[in-house]
Each structure stands twice: as C-alpha cells, then as structure tokens.
Image (cartoon, one colour):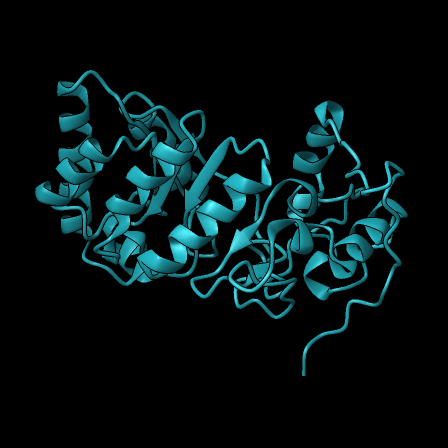
Length: 277
C-alpha cells in the first residue's frame, strides 16, 4: 500500500471514531519488503496511541538494520510465521533458506532481550501434511522459553481449499463484526480466509468506513450467520474461525447498533452476497 493511500485510510478510520485496539500488517505478501513499513507504524501509533501494532512476517528479510527500524518505530508485536522446526520441513513448506531465517530470528530475540523486551515475539507453526506430531512438540518445547507465545492453530481450510475434518457447531464469525481487513488498494475483504478477495465488501479509498462496515453485503452476511446459515460463500463452510474463536468472542462481545440520523435504530435491507464474475 502506498504511503498516501495508507494515510487516507488511517485518517478516515480515525474520523469514524471506532475503538481501534489492534492494527496488523499481514496478508499474502511479506510486510518487511515494504520500505515504508516503519513510517506507517509510526503514523499509526501517532493517530491511535492506545492501539497495538503487529507485524506478521517470515523474518527472511529481518536483518539487523531492519530490526533496529522496528524497535525505533514503536512496534508492539512481531508474529513470526516460522512454520517448522526442522530444516527439511521448513524449506519444503516455506521455500526459503532455513539458516538465514534462524539467524535473523535468534538475533532479533537477543536484541529484544537487550532492550528490555519492548516487543512481544510470537512464533507460529501451521500444521500441514509435512509435519509430524514429534516436530510440532519439539517446536513448542524449543521456542516456548524464548518468546512470548507459541502458536500452533488448528488446521486451516483457507477458504475451502483444504478440508479441515470434523464439522463443528458454528457461531457468527468475529471478523465480520470486529475487523476491517484492507488490501493494498483499499479493498475490504471479508476475512483472511478470503486471501484472494473473491468477495470484496467495499473500498476505503472511495468509501467511508461507516459505508463499508454497514453496507448491505456486510449486513447480509452477519444476518445469515446469526441465523445459522454458513453455506455462502464457500469459505465460510465449516471455517475454523467460526468454531471456538467465534464462540469465545460472543461470550464477551459488546455490539452497539449504529444510530440513524433521526435517532432510530438503523435497519439495512438484506441483499444477496453474489460472487463477482
């Protein structure tokens, strides 16, 4: 995302007045390849001083210079998509040099410790057919004492691309209530499972956050899921994000209906969510 587009979107969201708690730099690209990343973090922290900023990275580009820039930016969380313990598994899954990534991450852990650990470090491993149970346990045991959090999520379907196994009870996904996922061009995707944005829900460069968040398509998807209908789009069928994570969200969620200009509760017609051609 260009710095200009980033500033427009951050300013629009700030004017909207939503209680922003977390800003994440993640997606299908590698955030550390963005030469303006740390400038964006600095701006986000200035506009949303109470929000935490996270970067999700494979750290293949995290040399010492880049590490110092992250410390200077005020970054709160570095979440590392490590995805393996062993060299063979790592290079099969990640297609990156194992030694370089290990060197970068271990150096960052040491630099962070020397500064009093201002940045939370998380490491994650997404299980695939290439991982054994033994490797996953060794991953947990090795990284547990070195970082703040070791994350091994359940199998992820990635929009129905992979089968995730046993069907569970589904709850309305927190993403369509709590998150605006913005692509590089301002397009708002439904969630991270729609990683190629087949179901765009608006654009924050041409629309206000309120128009997008309360759009007919967004509202239609919320109403479907509240009614127990997860059939469309296909990405929502037995999605892991609609299981325990969504259940836990609804145990503590505070949903505040947006008021209309006349003081009455806003009612938006439900329209079909059609897949773009």
